[in-house]
Amino acid sequence: MSSHVRGSGKRQHIVETAYALFKRDGFHATGIDRIIAQAGVAKMTMYRHFPSKEELIVEVLDWRTARFESQLDRLSDSAKTPDEGIAAILGWHERWFDSADFHGCLFQHALAEFGEPDHAVFAAVARQKMSIQNRMVDMLSQTMPPVRAADVAMILFMLIEAATMLAQMGQGKAAIDNARKVASVLLAREIGE
Amino acid sequence: MSSHVRGSGKRQHIVETAYALFKRDGFHATGIDRIIAQAGVAKMTMYRHFPSKEELIVEVLDWRTARFESQLDRLSDSAKTPDEGIAAILGWHERWFDSADFHGCLFQHALAEFGEPDHAVFAAVARQKMSIQNRMVDMLSQTMPPVRAADVAMILFMLIEAATMLAQMGQGKAAIDNARKVASVLLAREIGE
DNA sequence: ATGAGATGAGACAGGTCTGTATCGTTTAGG
DNA sequence: CCTAAACGATACAGACCTGTCTCATCTCAT
Image (cartoon, rainbow over all chains, first blue to last red; front, side, top):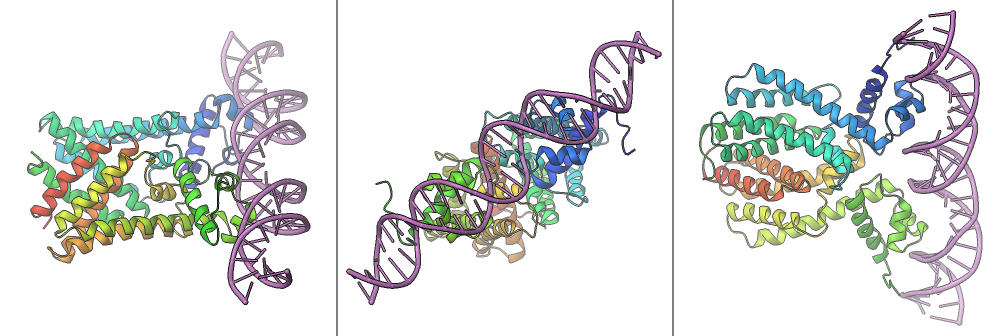
């Protein structure tokens, strides 16, 4: 009764259910049994789609990366200048911090639980973090030399990542405000040499 | 032969052994059996000192906070100006990133695995993060008004936290360099209003 | 040296974990 | 309608988890 999800929609349903549980409880703390129970799916159905829990985690992270990218793509369309683009990204994060079930950055959490550099989950995290960083480099390269764009992008990236962590500790508003102050300086004047 | 650790030194030995394992493998992924085996200690010895694994985790975090604080205290003694103090903290982190068994920030990892705000581990993380932040506020208050010192301290704190995470992804050097660039601007000129 | 506390060693309980196997049922496409 | 694939339900294996319990041994201060 509850679900007429069919075709390959079952696979996606498992991914999104696992995402919600991983986000709230963590990866090691979330068992396969809880995922399939929450998804209303047989265990073998999950193991036919994903060869292991680890592969499911990678799939969840990559799906989340794609969704995040498409959301930022929509924001970029309505931003003409780099300043507007950066402001849009900061605004997106500020709204995210206030969303109902915000539990910090899933990729930061994945990095914490799977910190070995040759782990598949580590690679998925690196993909997402480089993706957002490259996005800002591209935006900033419109109005500044590429070397400086890389520095400014990394600084903004660092502030956003830290703001996400601080948001989990109840200081998201102040963190975003301070990130904006630094951004305005970085985008207006020179820094470094 | 391996151990003549005795008295209440056994408790401390368990804490430091658990610290090394938690740091490398994470909290949920590290079982009690591995901790006591690595420490060369009976299971009941551990459970007489710590009522539960969760309390052991809190103890490990608080001990690590104290050690971190005493290290920074020594650095503060040889720093006259806020600029020197901030530079010393950044330098400490830069050396930390290059240390042999660097695996990122244990407190960030704890926050990832125990993200519920009313959890004892969460509180231990918050203590450490506020501690380093307050330390910088105190340093900066020597040469700037307290409101601005709070903002600058938070920005520097954010850059340091993000640099620690980036160091785990192999970008620690560039991250610290960029943190230094922002610090020099924050300490020299005005920001915000 | 003697009694009290700390410890070592290991069995044990009860639960959960990942992953596999089996079998009956449902669904979808030709 | 009919066949082949997908799915649900469940039992199962083997390992690991946290935490408790017992008992022999060791250490140390008095």
